[in-house]
Length: 267
Image (cartoon, rainbow, N blue to C red; front, side, top):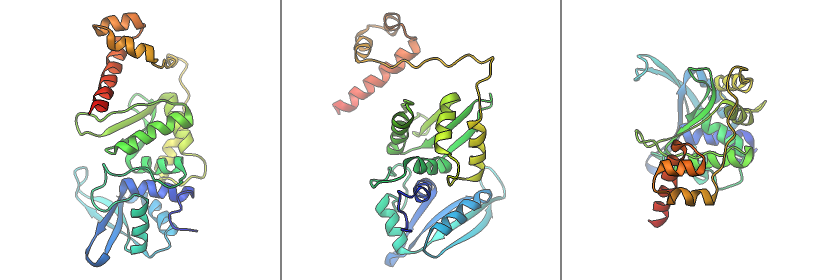
């Protein structure tokens, strides 16, 4: 077993998780450490990482006050080995602040396992307050957000676009209803390494069936190049919507995306 062979589904998942929730700390004379701190309820995944890591490592715990709890209990997995850290840096886990800098690996890797690791660390699986199933990811990395959208389109035929939100400049990508079921079922397959609580939530999401009294999903209608030209040439959104047989909201969002793309290409 080669450490961090990303074609191994377990290491692909582990690396995705470490990119999202791990932290590489540097010190003098090539000293440093990799540390992963998560809620104590998820300590089992740290034990799995410890078994997969051929280098000496420790798991400790601490209790501290946070914004959400006066006594938050967490578990911390720590690795000091320079060889291990060098391998992780080589694959794309940088030292220091990394949230906007991480990218998918540039070596062959198990894609859905890698994405499950990212989502286990920085995403969510479950049901909305209205009882609708979903799977989501929040990230500030443009490369990761783009990759997830591209992957679901190529692997599952689910097109998705995303942009940074205005509040915190993060990408919030969500798949809901049947799309959420499809993505969840694909990523959380039987026997895959995952946080146990998210595996349980994924099983509930995968079992969801649209209620008989819920309106059927509307078929997705792709934009053509001709429609894009007509939309950009139309004097108003209302006229474009009438001519194209689309909603004003859809036309407005599409025009905004097209103009943003034109601006980026001009820069």
